[in-house]
Image (cartoon, rainbow, N blue to C red):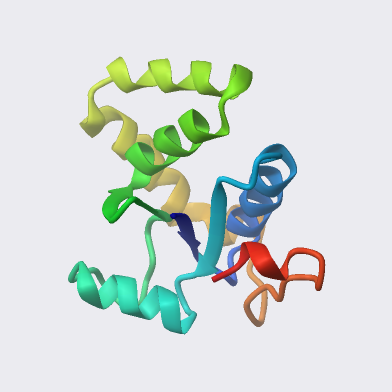
Length: 129
């Protein structure tokens, strides 16, 4: 199973989840907020900070991906034209993650924040862990 863990109160993160749901026609991805019980379990299992989330996480077949690696793995899973973005993997991870971190550090200021985590609609409930 491929699970995308995201900051449930971040507007940018929620928009990214909506984007992925709309383009994942085969249902390859499941979703969970980092603030959920499932998210807290993954953070603890991989010894990651349990607050001040600076990355979304992809758990793909038991393997953890973070930051730009997670984003690139996700577009690869989407397939089609989106998988062409995986070519950005040739850019050194330090450079990719530097840009990713700058966006993550400013995401609340630039895109806003919710008071509570996103609740999936009944139609999408099966896509959430």
